[in-house]
Image (cartoon, rainbow, N blue to C red; front, side):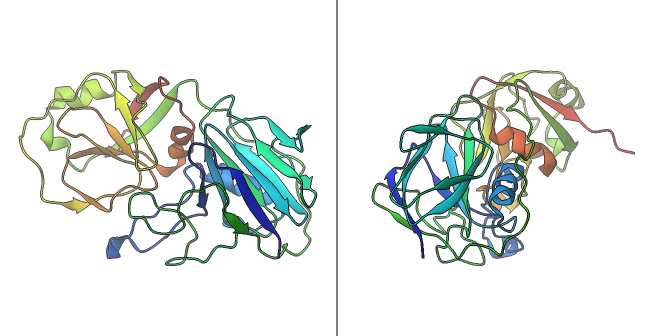
Length: 287
């Protein structure tokens, strides 16, 4: 079995697949890749099933030494790619010979990159997923120098695309919003203004949630709700009034009012929005 030896883990590199689905009722967060289309694209490029475990990098890339020849691909945030110091393709399959150093440099745009290897990262699954969950601590820890990552058996040969188109990281993050369930904690004027105001991506966000900075949303009620279930994309309004969009490592319950929910299809762009990116919430009209 081939392995990847971690020589430079980057600021935050984790193992991610499509997450732990169907266990929220047990209090288990979903986790999984924040930019799911980018993970699926990387896996397609190396012939894996869509949900094979890969690496999710954050801004600073990663450096790995191949223990055995491997086929890899990098998608998500654009970044320079090198094999033993020589430029290699980003967004396309790359053969890394045994003993060679494979480097993904700092992202030139966006935030999160995805490095897939043919056969997938074969760490043991926990509750049906190999994903690292930074909130609950489930799954493998973030990468550290000296880690040895097992690679699964290469998948049966199938025709692989040479390129998988993906959208560029957003210059402006536009998030559709299904209002509710707690709009009654805000005045109708506040809810209407929320769809007109502009926000910025805060540097304090993480895999749990995208935090924003802008006009605070004033409540008409004090205190907290009894803890209630939370879903992916929920927009919570904490006491400071600054909206937080829940991402893959979000808690399964919470006590702050949820003014609306962002559809899952908009969250890949949120995963790639750098601090300072303008944010606009667009309430959806009920039919």
